[in-house]
Image (cartoon, rainbow over all chains, first blue to last red; front, side):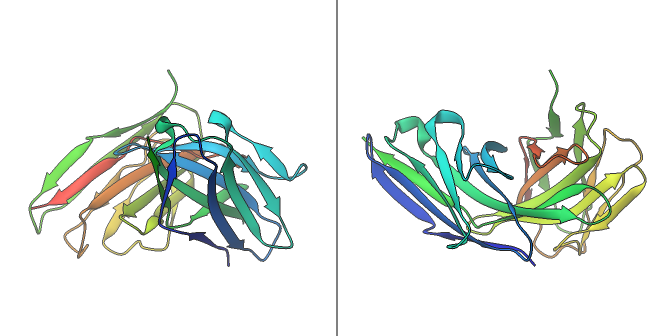
Length: 117
Length: 112
């Protein structure tokens, strides 16, 4: 069974400061890992994903994440926070759903990012 | 434009009534999903469907029902058996073999 733990339900950073959102996962098979962003009363938008290959993944809006197998982590970072980054961020893991070729996502509980001017 | 459309955006229901949430996609995706989102709980899977006329229960299916009569449509009915239906509901879809899910804008259901 797969699971995701996001450390910190709420993170505040100053504008221009480093953003670090933590995500640890458990999975019985090599996982696919995702970060999604959600603005208030909106759906989820994919920021970035790791499937195979390079462990440092770059996404949209200047975000990146590094897959560390030994630490079972997939932390999200951005060098310099912008006011528009204020949103809720969800880490997710998936394993192939056997027999169907589709992927079932398991989400963390989310981290709400506030950016202080 | 291709995408997933959920309607309505806001929905109010009286206790004891069934209500149906609409989800339509024009992405030609095979798989569709319904998630429930509560504050601080993340997203939890209600039902999913890999192909037309087939669907499977997710983690919290009790009190919900779905149908998949057409590839582009996956409506969710919240029945009176659902004890705590007030939540934000998200529909998603994905291509067979793809790791990426696309989400609709959500429906906020409030029981009054």
